[in-house]
Length: 352
Image 1: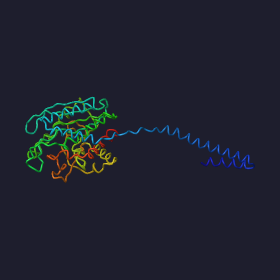
Image 2: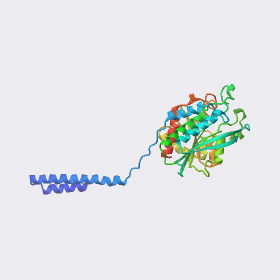
Image 3: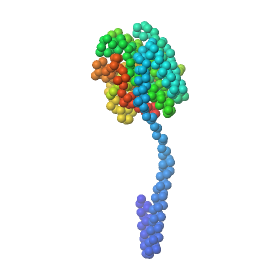
Image 4: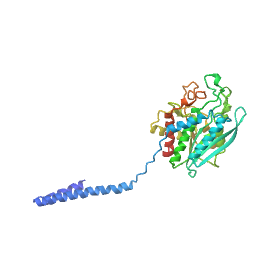
């Protein structure tokens, strides 16, 4: 600035004697200022060229109505108890639905012995997106439903199977909508979606002991020992369980914090940044032996659990209608599905 001001004073002193000179002075000053401004504009162009703007990654809009439909559709078959016709029909629908969205779908058939020594046929259903990518994220949910409503307030219901709308179908519904979105817009990372079977065939409430831990999550135990591709690796995983109830709260589940505290922290921080701090709360939750536990312990993949925990409920741990006959479609809120789906989509497309 100082350099420009001195040149103007010099020109005024030399040409102030005549109108003609004053006109010339005006012309010269105008030309100089115009030249100076032109140089300023020219200087901005190289700078703008050097500071290359990176293209902003857009996150697809998660469709909660579509996810709700996928929950409702699962329930339309009836309780998805292993060994039942409803279980077999739902398995076929899940496979065909995922095949519409992914070119690579694995159906992992296995046999598992449950707490009462019965042996059931199970099916883990796996959809793979971008199989060539080394960086991978694993997402999981269980699709079977519990054969016993053993926490129902009415003892007459304790041997009845449940719909499992929130406990099972909600997480599966969210992941089916995620699969549909990935079919429409390809992410830059590899994504594997696993729908685990035989998660919820643990012993009834009155027969449970501290030694019955391995009676739960039978499908995830099998997959962790026998992944769908040899030497499978993922950078991290996220399990969705009971993610559909109204006003759900997802605290920091204990095993998630033990095995993958950094992943848990970053996902919860991301949820807060996009406006969901009222759902993803920074409070310590209990230690839940869920499918993610076996993926961590057996497969060695750091996996966290997004799970609705409520210490104030009548069961003291989970949402109010957990393992009761009222875990039906009335307990599903599209707004909660939207929250969880949005967080998962941001993890996939923006990273953590």
